Image 1 (cartoon, rainbow, N blue to C red):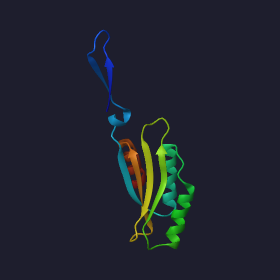
Image 2: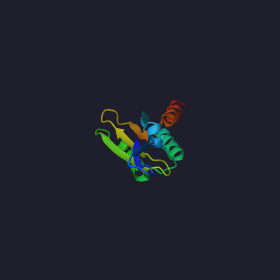
Image 3: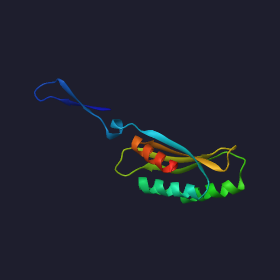
Image 4: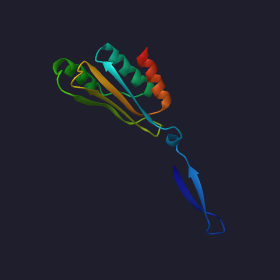
Length: 127
């Protein structure tokens, strides 16, 4: 919440005006899902790009698939996207994590999104 102070005309009493940013009106949350590293993952990545009108890091996507075949013993973390979505005051962060005990799948985490966004992606992965 942002508070601005103004002086009233003709006096020194302060009047407070409170502004609530759009981000404060709608709390941000996190979506997390476990996805097999296969063609379905590419579909989910394309849906994320389309939904948020962004481009995920293609080199990182290729690296995810390459390392899924070559290195099935170590934990891996990937940053697919970090930045501001145009015209929205929120920082969108999309990450992937491959656990060492489950190398054939990846945890996709989308941070700083709204409840409606979470609902959309829950429907996507459940279908």
